[in-house]
Image (spheres, rainbow, N blue to C red):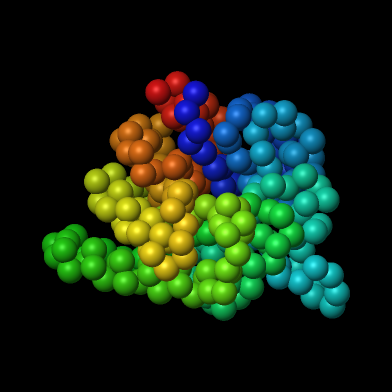
Length: 248
Ligand code: PGA
C-alpha cells in the first residue's frame, strides 16, 4: 500500500443520517477521509474503523455569539481529524474571501486539525494553453499567498494539504488533463517551497475524478491523492477507486 490519500467530499449529500452511515461503512478504508455534512459527522465518525473523518468547513472562533457556525474544538470533540477549507463552492456561493479562509486555516491548524486547502482557477481557454496556464498560475499563487498569510511556524505546515481543484472541472465531468494538472501541482509545490519553506508539501487533485480516470493522476509522484465529490457518493465506484489507488 502506498501513502496516497483519497478524500470523499460528500457536499450536501446524502439526505439522511442512515444513508450517510451506510455509505461510510462501505468506504471505510485506510488513507481515506470521509467528509459528510455537519449533522452526520458524529455518527459517521463512530462507524469508521479505518478511514478518518473530515468536515467540509469550520469557523475561526472557538465559541461565542456566532449563530450558525461550528468551531474547530467542536469538530475535534466529535472525532474530526481533517477539514476542507476554501472550497470554490463556498468562495462562490457563500462569498468566502481569502481573508476569511486565512483565519479559518490558522485557527483550524492551531486547534490540531489537518487542513485541506482548496485552490484553483475559474476557467481555461484551451485554445491558448500557454497564456492560460500562466494566468491560472498567477491566480493560484495569489490564493496561496493570501490564504496562508502569516502561518509561520514549521509545525503548522505539517498539518497542511493543498487541493488543486480547477473550478471548471468540478462537477462538470470535464476533468483536467492529468499532464496539465501536474504542471500546476508542481507549480503549487514550488510556491509552497519558495514562499513558505515547505519542502515536502502534499498536493491533491480534484475535479471530476472517477474510477475511469483516477489511475492517470495517481501515477504522478507529485500528486498526493484526490479530492472526490460526485463519485464518492457511489460506494461501488469509490471502492473501485480505492482499489486502483492503493493496490497499484
Ligand atoms: P467532483 O467534485 O469530483 O464532483 O468534481 C470535487 C470537489 O468539489 O471537491
